[in-house]
Amino acid sequence: MPQPGTMTAMSKQMQDCVEACMSCHSMCEETMSSCMQMGGQAQMQIMRALMDCSETTRMCADMMMRRSPMSAEMCALCAKACDMCAEACMSMPDDPQMMRCAESCRRCAEMCRAMAGARM
Image (spheres, rainbow, N blue to C red):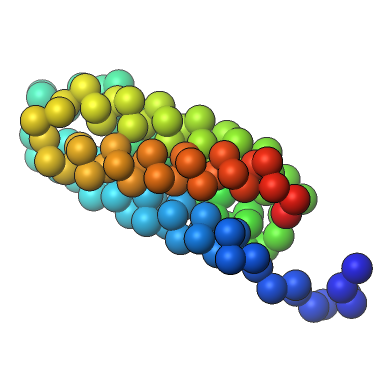
């Protein structure tokens, strides 16, 4: 057990997962902006999925960085939110921003699933 007040270094896997979460968060925010500019074309289901994913990925990264004991459960939830967002984005396959977002969500989901199964 580390001394009180000291933090153990994050594993490479955890660092990569934090980066994937932050990247996905940014991509979801950009995609929401793109959706708003489209107006009526952007379905509410996609906007909800983007918002859920954006918030979840940010919170997941924050929890891993502070070594929360709930990180594994949060990573599992984050993977689910990312999967749902990727699916929603795939409903607009002709939109390059949506496809980039779906790819970012898939990568983040994969890394979060791995972290959910790992010891934190």
